[in-house]
View 1 (cartoon, one colour):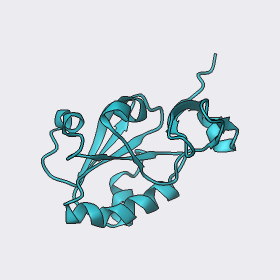
View 2 (tube, rainbow, N blue to C red):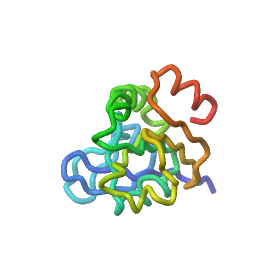
View 3 (cartoon, rainbow, N blue to C red):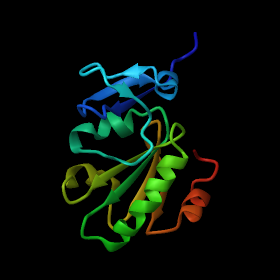
View 4 (cartoon, helix red, strand yellow):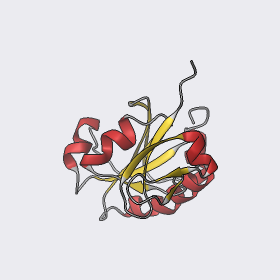
Length: 148
């Protein structure tokens, strides 16, 4: 029996997390269980929290690129438009998630975040690639080539 791949996405209407089959998300056939709004794979980075990190990152079936950042960090702010471009270009193949290390230090702590921006690529709940510092889209794609 073939395994149906699913992903947790947040509803654009009410913000509720929903787990839906990838095919349904890509085809526009998934709807929020709470408010019935249409669901789709995010084409922009998604802010996560302590509460949602496990479902949005660790239990994701797609690769998940997590941006560990802080609002006071100038290189982090420089990376924001690059991550927007990356998320839009690779929507449906990789999910981009942002975690504010100031607001959620307990979630960041196990990943030994010492320099930001820190990008970790997760597959099957495990870190498979680490990239530190601000960079252009082409370099980010080169760093992740063959992994997404």
